Structures are given as C-alpha cells and as structure tokens.
Image 1 (cartoon, rainbow, N blue to C red):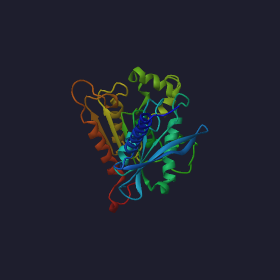
Image 2: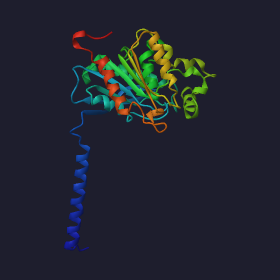
Image 3: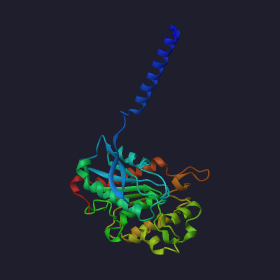
Image 4: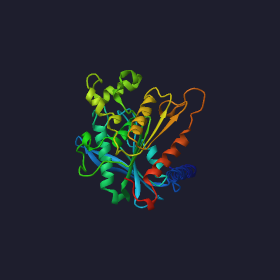
Length: 314
C-alpha cells in the first residue's frame, strides 16, 4: 500500500497527539504537592494460610522522629471493602503521621473473629517493624469508620486475655494501642435485634453466622463495651445523631462506659447526620466533615504527640 504525504502527516499528528495525552496523564499522576509516599502491598501477616496485605503511607514531613503511627481500618459492613478505603490514612499522613491501611478477612468467607485477629496482627506488625518505617513503637493509634470503627474500638479495649490475637504472625509483640478513634461504630452487639434493622441486621448475622439468640456469647465477645478497663487508651467517638444503621446510642453508651472507668473520652454528636455523616433533612450537617477531620487530627496529636519534656504517657 502506498502512503501519501497527507497520510504520513496525519499519522505523525496522531502519534504526536497520543504522546501529548500520555504526557498529560503522567503529569496528572505526579503529585509533587502530595505530602506522603505510599509503600503498597506489604505482606503484614497471614490469615487462614493466605497473605494479608497493607499499604503504608510515609509522610514527607514527619511530625517527629521516630514518628507516631495510626492504623486506619476501612468500613463496609465487615463483608466488603479493602485497603483502598484509606481516606483516613491519607488524612493523617498529610499531618505527619506514618499511617497504614489494611485488607482484613471479610465475613463472606471468614466469620468473626477473623477480622479482629487481622487488625491486631497489623498493629503487631507495625510495632515489630517500627525501625523499618521510622515508627515510634510506643505511640501507635488505631482508627476506622463503621465496621472499621467497631474494629478500632475492639483493638483498643480487648487485651490479650480476650483471646482475639490470632496466630497470623508476630505473636510475641504487643497489639496495644495508645489512642483510638471510631466513626459511627458498633460498641455493643447484645442490645437486641431491634436496634439493628434494615441491612445492618443482615450483615451482623452474616458476621457471626447466626443470630444473637443462637450465638449470645459470640455477640458479647465482639462487643468492645464489655472490655472497657482502667488501662484502655484515650478514645474519640464521632456519630451522627440520626444514624439509622448504627444507632447514635451505641457511641453514647461507649462514652459512658469510658467515663465510669475514668478514662479519657471525647464524643462528637453530629447533628442532622445519618450513617457516614450523610445529611438528614434540610439543615446542614454540624459539625461539618471538615471540622470532624480537624478534630480527629487534633485528637491524635494530643495523645500521640505529647510534649517531649513530659516524657511518654502510660
């Protein structure tokens, strides 16, 4: 086939255009203003014989060395989601914390306690590998939203005697944390089926592979409120007052349990907000999500970045 000058020029123009598009895409994916770098697909533990992966976010400007760390646990009703649900990890990495987002085993194939075993193993991994990531092993926090909020509360309150550590790795290392934050998480599964209606009731039964009547001890074993004790870390609770998936009362009662134990606890009641801080009604959500995020950062800085002169908190 003979190529005319116009065909050749057209081909060259198309190639040049494609080249410009590719260059534009490359520039778009470069984030020189980004405040962290990501180490992806790190094998942190094993669960049921399979490798479990996490991403670690390293701040370009650390708030101190070694650096406090926070594990972010994604939501999804314990049945879906993965480590890409990492908005909280990114938020805190931008503020100078080393953070991590993990994949944990989901309820479709692995019922409770597989998920909490993986989360606790992730804390142990971060502590055991603190030097590798420049982490302060004495200042590790945990946070999450929805199902992740429940798991964050459980990491914070259930000590080794609860039997939820699992055998995924780093068994000789502590899974204790020094601060925890939970957005609209379940604190008590034993309140009866009426509190968990709609889709929530279905995912709860799926999580335990049975109803509360069938497995009352398992429902209690998964409830952070029953583990609250004098040595638990400071806790931040944030919950929409109009949440119809995880009732606001769940966080209210958890805060009361913390106060009875004379532990530091903060609760932010979000007005005109349902689950995931979705607006309910015509009035605006208050405080705004931006303010909630600011308060979360302030909370972790308060408890993971105390004055160096005061020494580490116990």
